[in-house]
Length: 206
Image (cartoon, rainbow, N blue to C red; front, top):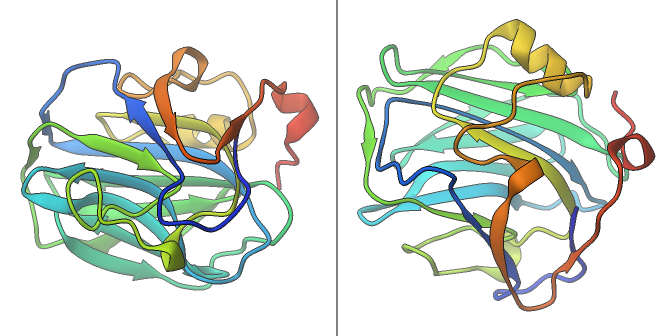
């Protein structure tokens, strides 16, 4: 679990992918977040050399989420999350259809489409705690994450409904093949605390 105790334009964690992959035709990212902030804050930021917001999950306010793919964005409204509890979040994008979808605490959003089809190409920089407005930088304190993040996984495919349900309910699930929280490589910058806490102790799955 990573704790981001204060708002800043510096504190962040850089995640190192398991595979040296530079072409994505589909993505699923799942994570769990705990915060008491209702302001805009970023949950996951993947940038490419030519596209800072290549795959970005941001929460503008409670119940409202925004997903960026290849610099384009779609918004999802009316999703049931809470302050001061663990919220489980999954986001998917399929380059063949352009479709994306979010799941919050086991509840799906409507599916929405991006006009961008095909793939995302380039060496990714993956950041927790900050939104990359430039490749590996350009951080803004007003969008920094304050709270705790854990169980971050990334796959280069769209998970099935059954697989997402397994993650949401903290059941046995296949870890991410791009980011695997159980064998994570990372580096920290600034005031970030990491703890080892068993999921049964830290999570309240809604």
